[in-house]
Image 1 (cartoon, rainbow, N blue to C red):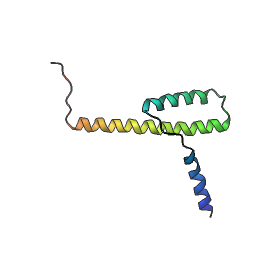
Image 2: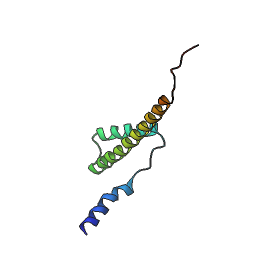
Image 3: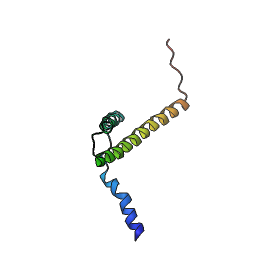
Image 4: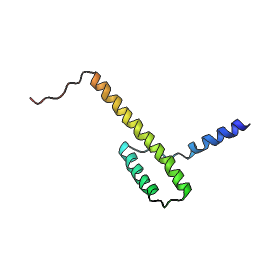
Length: 87
């Protein structure tokens, strides 16, 4: 039974996940605002923890988007894209 209790404790925060940002730019904007609030030092401990968790979600979202773009560029480069030259 202890395993089941620990398991349900670990999955509980996932139920409180905020929605995914609409875009990379929206995620960066939200992350910057969140950092400013946390750095202000005026948040209660629970809000700081929630802010940290949301920041981690936003960072993971941004990293995933950047990786996807890098992968796409790599595919395009390997497909024989040639540097543009003015004629």
